[in-house]
Length: 190
Image (cartoon, rainbow, N blue to C red; front, side, top):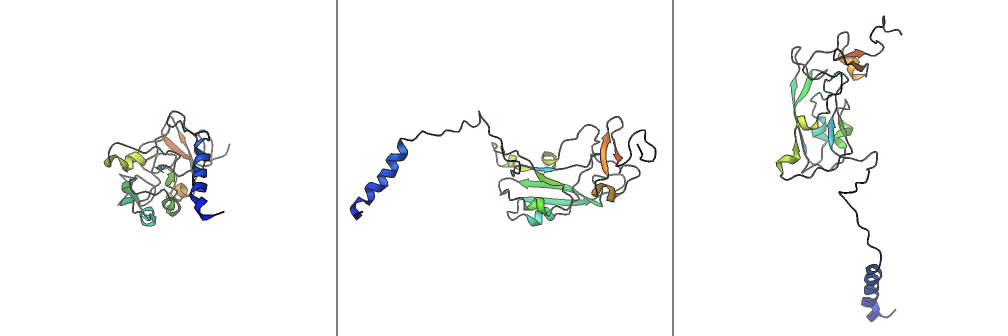
C-alpha cells in the first residue's frame, strides 16, 4: 500500500468502531458478581469463641510492598485476653489509599487471621475514611461468640486454637466447646 494512504487506513479503524453497538455498564444499578478469589476489603477473623486470630506479629506489615499496613502488638494477660497467644494486635490499620490488593499480607499471616473479602466498593468522601482501623476490619461476632477480652475455653490450650480444635460455640452460654466434646456428651463420645 502506498505511504500516502496510511492516514486513510487509520481513519478506517476509527470509522469502523463508530458504527458498532455501544456497550454500557449499568453500574451501580446492576452489580456484577465478583470471581470467588477476588481480592477485596481485608477482614480480621475470629476464633469460634470470639477471640481474635491476630497475634500482633506484624508479618503482614513487613510483607506489604506498599507500606499500607500498620500493626502495633501488645501482650495478653490472664485478665485481658484478646487472642489465644502471648500477644494480640492492639492497633491494626490498613490505608486503602496505598493498598494495591496484592494479597502478600494474606500469605504472610501465620494464623490465617487476615483474609480478603469480595467487597470492592471502598470509595468515600474523605481520605481519612479510607484508613480502616481494627474495629472496621474485625469480623462481626456470630451467635454464641463473646466479645474479647475473655479467658480461653476451659480445658483448652493455645495449641487447640491454632490447630482448630475449638470448633463450635454454645449459644446459651456464649462459650466455645472443644472439638470432640458436645453438650451432654461424656468424655467427648456421642
